[in-house]
Image (cartoon, rainbow, N blue to C red; front, side):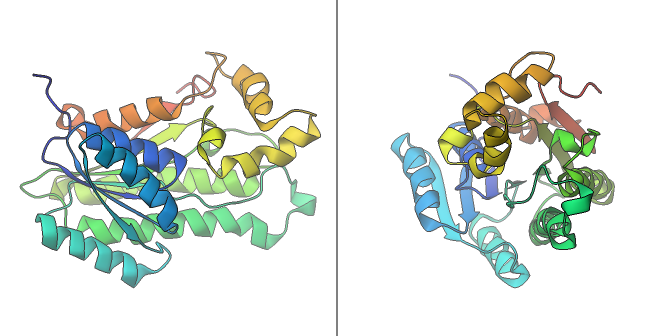
Length: 269
C-alpha cells in the first residue's frame, strides 16, 4: 500500500479557490490531509471542494476575507477547535497589481498595492495559524513568492519589492517559530504555464504585456517568458502542488528558512 505523504495532517489553504491554491488543495487531499480551503469566492471554493470529494478526499470550505484579521483568526480558531491542531498552512492569496509601468508613470498607490496587499495577508494568516501549530505536532507554513524578488528588470518595482518582502518575511518567521517546532518555507515559481487557463488572475495580469507584443497571453508565456529560463519552459500547477506536498510532509522535515526555487532556471541560486 502506497504511503500517503500527509496522512492525518490538518491543512488550511488561504486562496484555496484559486489556480495555485486549488491545485495544492487537491494534491494535499490526495495525500491524505484533511483540507480546509478559505477564500473570497464561494463558487470557486465549491469547485475545488467538488473535485476533492469526488475522489474521496476530506475538505471543508469557508468564505473568509483574509484582510479581516479578526475573521481570519476566528476561522483558524474554529479549525483548531474541530481538529485539535493546524499542521499545515499555505498562503496562496493573489493580489492584482501593476507590472510593466516604469517609475515615471507609476503612482504611489500602484507601487504600494502588492507590497501592502501580499504582506498584510501573510502577517494576518501566519499570526492566525501559528498559535495552533507546533510543539508535539510539527507545523509547516508555506508561502509563495516570485523570481521578481531577485530579478533586475524595469517595470516591476512594486511587484519585485513585494516578492522580496515575502521572502524576507518567511526567513525571519522561520527563525521566530523554529523553537515551537514550526517550519516556514517559501516557494518561488516563475509564471505558471497553465494558470491562466485554470482561471488565475495572471491572465489579466499578463494581458497588457501580451498585447504590447502582439501575442496571446499563452504565447506571451510560452514564447516569451519561458525562453528566459534554462529549461525553456515554465512550471505547471501540478509541479508546484507536488513540491508543496513534499515540503509540507515529514520527509521534508529538515527544511526551514529557505526558498524552493521553481523558476525553471530563470534564477540560479
